[in-house]
Image (cartoon, rainbow, N blue to C red; front, side, top):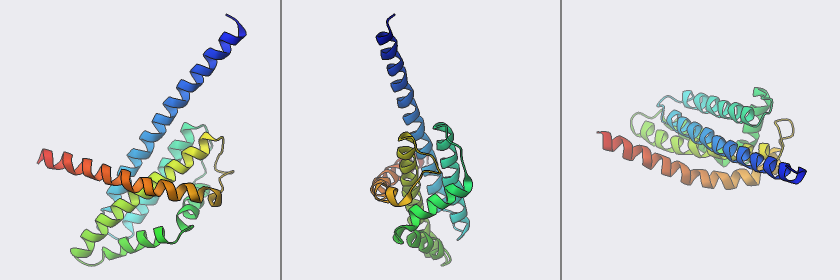
Length: 178
């Protein structure tokens, strides 16, 4: 086998590995998005936010491992907060949806629906932003939230649609079983 043929085979193997890794990354994001949606429906204020934060950190830990990067919980927390806090609309919506749950029945229902969807969308967006960053060779130390903010905003919009689809699928599965 010539050197050129070996290089072609090596490149093909690398492409297969990258595709497999991208599929695994998408699975990690979607699984954590669903967990985040579930935490959003927890009727107890603040507990939902703790669950969301833990879920997003766990997702970043798994994505970091998948891409061979060292994980730092402290840096990951700061990165998540800087992404979410860059536009105050997202943290304000999440906090308000959590606090609305204090109101018996109506508040709990409205807060659960609102926070479930928002939690899923933000988790999706955080995951996608970090996958792009890791795929470009970045790690937690080189992450720049200001540069990633535009991508986060775009992924958040996509995440809203993905969350709606996931909620609809979950609702269909639940109503089919009943």
